[in-house]
Length: 367
Image (tube, rainbow, N blue to C red; front, side):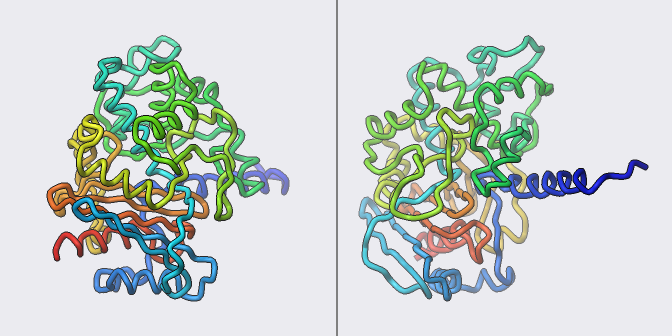
């Protein structure tokens, strides 16, 4: 058996830790930081909020409710105490994927792309018998892993930075050429890589860099004033660093405010623009729900174009997480109710936004 020198061991340890850290991606559908899991179902939303912010002077959690067109929000700090109604700018992590999916639905509605097109119809890739379809990318059934290791991840880890910073589109395209998949609907596997590929496809469809493409789409089509690709500057702290044209931006690079996110939830509820409703239709079944998730009111039954569908509660939702932020958006179309939770706490910190948001939304639906 080979004996490793200490320097080799050190690099191996760093690499293994790096893999564990990056595996969390942008928050995705994973639920972290669960406190006394069996007690959570009995806790009220207010109790969850008070516990999560207990003794934390830096906590700033904003909660928004959309109810039949009316939008209200409150800001909470340490021990669940209400703060001044001031809007803050949060990283929304994987909720970015729903914006990428919305732009895809626009492209489909315009007839310039089809969900059943193969990605090699748009990207310059080595010749292979098969590349995944747009549909399989959007539903996380392409067979791609959550991410693939690239060299910039090492420096990002050592400097405690965004693990996906500096992964270029050239690296993404090169990686695509090295992966061999079967022409099949793979089991649901949440993939930041797959959404990054979808972003690269949209760049080709619209002949525009993703940052400008998405920022223009958000401001001109959706009319949101405070949602944008992160430039690392806003009123809170510890935003992720991104480099120009990073390949993983379509999976988790947006910043937003509570008013924008409530407006965004309202658009989803009301189907405005009209093509957004296409993203809410179940396209693939998901078999990842567990008894633990269900106890907390988290149901993952199927997936549309980027959105998760909870059949039991008729909720369509998504969550997101970065190193220092986590978030949730969910809505019930029939009752015209939506909930947004934006938190400046890490996904692993006590009770995450997804659990609190699901609790609040289901309680409002059942009133």
